[in-house]
Length: 142
Image (cartoon, rainbow, N blue to C red; front, top):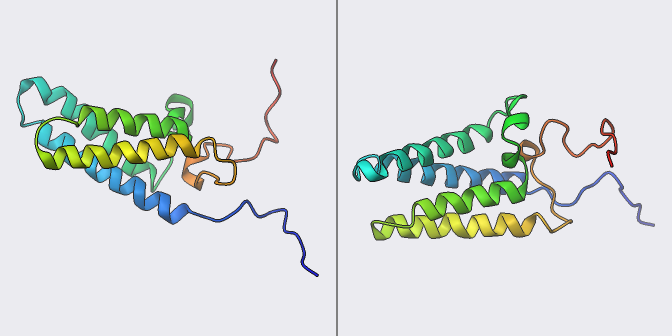
């Protein structure tokens, strides 16, 4: 007789999400860094994209406790997907390599937006915010 494990939340894709997020962080930082030298018009855009790449990469290794209060969009599939789409849109100019990288980041962003509505896949541990999946300490506010 099989037993049902109610504690299991489905397959753990944490390593896959970490690899994808690190790839996006690397692409964002590299493309932002190359935009710094594309002219004064793209200088600040490059700073912004490179900073987002550094933040995304940093969040894969350590999550500061106060960051959830200020940047809660990094802790959901929908928010992170929209940030990735923004990075892709900011990078969709210039060389063919930059356009290919922007397309990859765009596809990852669309995939994350879709994953927000798939109940069977839980976000990885570093994307669950300060309280994780637990709702014990939350009050219903209507």
